[in-house]
Length: 412
Image (cartoon, rainbow, N blue to C red):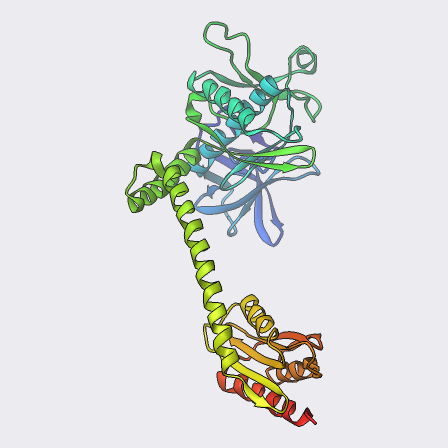
């Protein structure tokens, strides 16, 4: 299997090792060493990165058949004795996130009696799945407060292997999933009573030596998943970077609104109220405009036998389809009226309507116009609508003119 040096000291970054085996792993060269500092993907924690004698390490995996650690590399390594260096910022980030998860999970159990049933350490954020159907925001904030109190008290974090008989006597937060000597992570109690450990759990991951190195634990999201709640959180530099990004955004917004960042919520409420008022006024103005437009269109109708026909196109950016339908419906209230309407925007929308008592089926007219514009449509004899991808005003006008001629030819 090879000696796992990170168990002895998670803060080491350089080591020397001898190659035990060379192999190919998923198309890439790989090596097994007699000892390593590279942590493999395991227990929800991603693998370390770094170099072996100058060659980048792409992935680190535990081989299921014998527990050997496979170092997948960017190229072949000829030497027998290798110098390894791990990516320390990545390692320390994982140490902060993983130890933070232990604290957060223990806080959930202490305050809410809620077990952690899943953990994922992602590249941007980390998550824990809590056995709670719907975790309220207030409860999550209380857990976050306790977790950060443990961080700020700078408690000791101890990792060690224990035999099965000792393991039985320990108040583990969760039971181990492996047999034999088990590695555990202990987070000490308060200075006044350090023997009262805050948490003790089996874990093979890398961890900080003291909780103060985590700096900060911040819950950033709750996602409800049936009987579980997925809690998104950030620790250490990730939490700091998130705070800095949010600070920059709120500062820019506050400057644009000429208010302090603490007044942003009130400023937004004022803007929303003003927007609601303006939208109401705009809606009223559009309704008045629509009434006037219907009157104007009705006045422009041409006589076609016993009917009055209105053919009109709105050029880009056109009118919303719902307004087109409303105008067609209003025109159809005028006795003897037939309306052939189209609006040209990102697509062409058509609406044909006729007044009650007019013995004309507008559906065939509309379908023919839509087909000429490479679109589709349908409806009822008195009201039909459709749309088409062709938006050239000339072709839309030709389609409506053809509909107008067809209408003329259909009149006895």
